[in-house]
Image: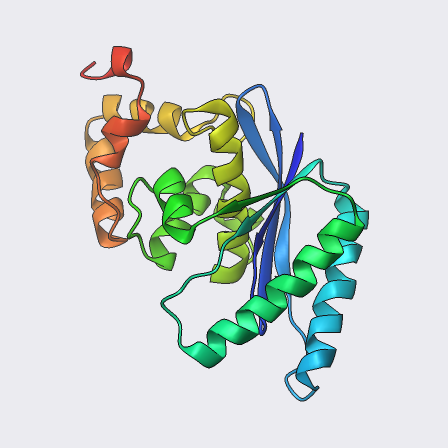
Length: 210
């Protein structure tokens, strides 16, 4: 199954495409849709609509996951975000794709283990799963990947990582057995502000404490 994840925005819309198969996920593509700043807002919406249709045509997703509206932004920003989401949803509806919506906290909890995680923490975990080189260096793109991964998580239960059995739980368990390597990894997690306790939630119960 090919899942397209979208982090909507009127200035920058991020997206990520993963292949979800046999409880494993492989990153196929990620990037951003950026309208020119000096065009009218209506032209921005048209740009988002047209370029999202191009992405859908290129990757042929089976399902789409999109982040729902975050109500913490100011009124004017919220209005523009809703209008951008309208353009996105119209493009997806015209493509006749199943659409699933997830709240920002739900996405963060699925990929980091904490609903209040920062964008830096989400990006850090996406880099651990798929490799830094495979990801576009923007929060918008990594948020798009995280949204797609959240949808995959809903289908499989435990979070599945990149292909070839290289999921996050396996990585954490292997590092746990390495002693000093595990300590170095924990230090990196703390530097990024990631709750180290997430490791225990991701490692299967029957494997903990080995």
